[in-house]
Length: 103
Image (cartoon, rainbow, N blue to C red; front, top):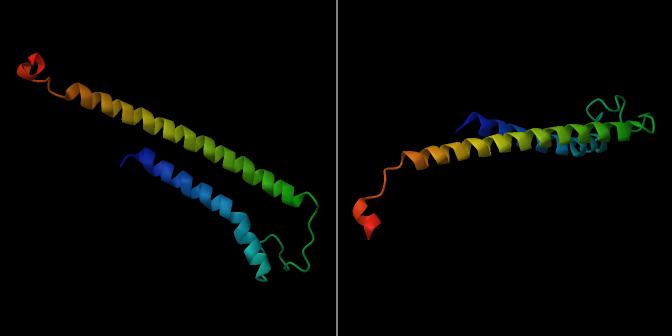
């Protein structure tokens, strides 16, 4: 297993975790929690501005797009490594027998 595959797995796991984060915060708020620090005194006394939600959403989207860009780079690197290995394997194959080639 190459290091690039480990990086790809970590990036995918991070992307999944970030997409689940808003849902987990909302579940914590509904359950009476503080929303992981979003509303320290609970949902009933939470005072935020109108722009808090869009700011958080924009930040998460920028982070997701950056992680998707890194995933694309890692997949491109993995594809290059696989092609190089395929070429080396093809070159290291013994030539076909002359009898079979003449037939």
